[in-house]
Length: 136
Image 1 (spheres, rainbow, N blue to C red):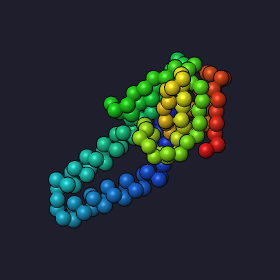
Image 2: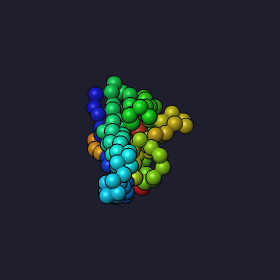
Image 3: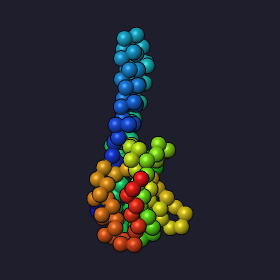
Image 4: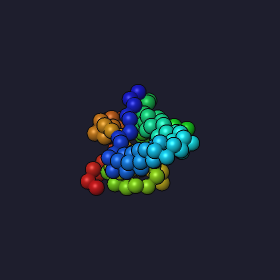
């Protein structure tokens, strides 16, 4: 079993951090303790989401998890292609640098493992038929 953590990209981290830090400072300055606590809860929620997002390869199954909100299992033998993509659409990934995994005939998943090359290498070792397209 191998666990890959999600990459966190500065293109998402910095804007969200600036907004949340600004809200915390503003709430503290105005002594708005309810707003202060609410913003801290949001910060902790984002930290939890990041910490709980992982891509696990276990016994020829790829398991994609993001807290209680997202869970998908993909049989490695059904993966057809892995393609590098750059997008901001909703996915269990914290970076716009992502991998699109196409499996079966119509299924796909978008993820962003921190160790992208190790992730691809392990999947292609398990299923040499996977077509990898790294140019985006």
